[in-house]
Image 1 (cartoon, chains in turn brown, orange):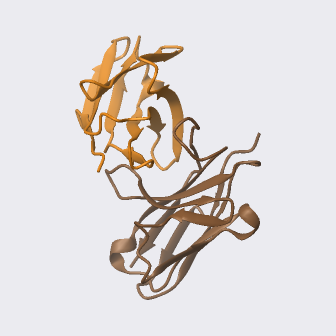
Image 2 (cartoon, helix red, strand yellow):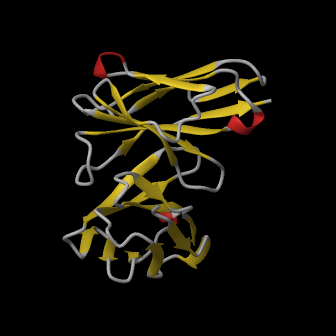
Length: 115
Length: 111
């Protein structure tokens, strides 16, 4: 069974430029998550989708970040414009259903460097 | 808001030693607790999931316990090997229904 797929794995951009990350969850997983992980810290939730609906986006900086999950499968996270402080690893995860009883499976992440 | 703390931040042990990693959380109304492993430059690999009705879970050389009353979980690794070297993260789902992570313990097992 294929795991969570993310691309690109690495991205280097100049500040004020836009950037987009793509995630393909495990087949059949209803719930998709985007996390931000700063160096030496644990991941922090940015947004959670159940099918196509964003049900928890309270920690997404909406002035510059946006996300979508078309047809309830793949998802894209966008930053426009990027700032130096956005340099981090962006992780995508999926679970069969939402809720505490279902394990979250993580992708390898996209490491973003903003110069 | 759930807060998760992991101590120590880093740990170095000789090969073959048994070790314990600690995790504490503030919200006793925790629904489950999950331990992950993260290798450098990689994503997270789920190791063990303990549901709130359980007290421990075992997988191979790993044993994780959950004590909700004290707000603590431990990950026990038996007979450590150099291949166990990684960062170990615990994460809990509390009343906010979202996974909250600790900062991790970076483990180095010396050959």
